[in-house]
Length: 222
Image 1 (tube, rainbow, N blue to C red):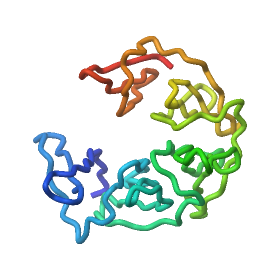
Image 2 (image 1 turned 90 degrees about the vertical axis):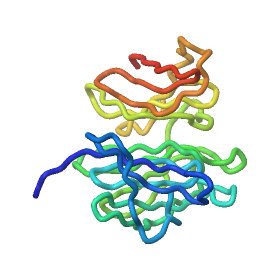
Image 3 (image 1 turned 90 degrees about the horizontal axis):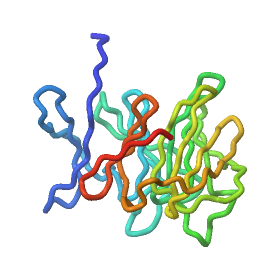
Image 4 (image 1 turned 30 degrees about the vertical axis):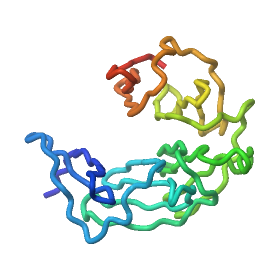
């Protein structure tokens, strides 16, 4: 019909079922409708990163039998089918992934971290996927200090461009500029250090929201 609507897709593991299943959250009736697929072996892995573009959900890396994987796939939310993509150059678990626009109007997926300490260095810590060419390349990132394992990241729009804001496991704040290909450390500016675990980051306008411990919702102005 040429009509596009936004839906929330949810992946849940319901015990005692061994594999997660996908559901659609109905926006009006507020119930989860299961998606019937031919197989579930492409369900998100523990430690996978997610990126959404239009009606596609990209799933990047994760753990397979306790070991990081370089596998990348996407889920077509119209066809409800899985498609494999070329793997990353490095196996990664719990990386940071962001979809960013290029100057030419295309899109690229930037992936940071997710490597073990014994293999991570400035030459392989980041890589980028060009959607138009379907290829992965390493990204040499200029940074005075390579962030440790990134706990959360979110894409923010500034007056100049899109930037990735990230926090590593030490609570250090960073921002990444694609035009300068540079990570900038912003120092520890945490005003509520008691709330350690923060998940499900969400940007609304110029505000950043997240879900924290003890059932709290936190907000800030980055």
